Amino acid sequence: MKIVIASNNKDKIEEVKTIFAQKNIEVIPQAQLQVPEIEETGLTFVENAILKARNACKHTNMPAIADDSGLEVDALEKRPGIYSSRYAGPQAIYADNIAKLLQELRGVPKARRTARFQCIIVLLKSAIDPTPIICQGAWKGEITLAPAGTNGFGYDSVFWVPAHQCTAAQLTPELKNKISHRAQALQKIMCSI
Image (cartoon, rainbow, N blue to C red; front, side, top):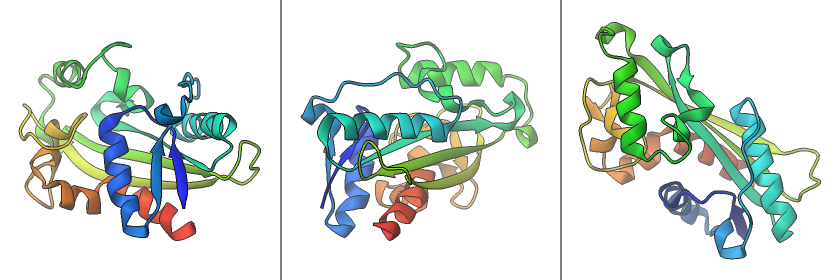
């Protein structure tokens, strides 16, 4: 089976490809099929994921999956949320977003640094599919005082995973692909295909 992934994030695409390979599902990045990126105008992870998946279906006539995910920090009223990838501005890189997050949390005690990664994955069989499959994964943790670890991407280096006593960036990719928010949502999607 072949599915288009409505994303241009290379790190996210590799994670999805690795997890879907377990089911012999070929994931084709939308850029490979000249799908133009669509603006994320939704106000929720669900709305943005549906927008992206529908756009990919429309341009390819193939089934498509889209992920919209982000970090919710309790002390920041669940920010950065849907704006996680562009928290420090539209051209921000991972380090910029982390720097802004840590700056905003300066002086916040450890007990109030609770957070979670949220992930919504949507599968549409066509651009007019009236019943998208929507799956969610959530991964609870805390925000550290400083980055640690070199694996992963995004906010992984400041996301403390209490069960493993390290940041997400200190986990092996194999373990992360079993326990992360995206892994949880993708496992649910794979069960419904």
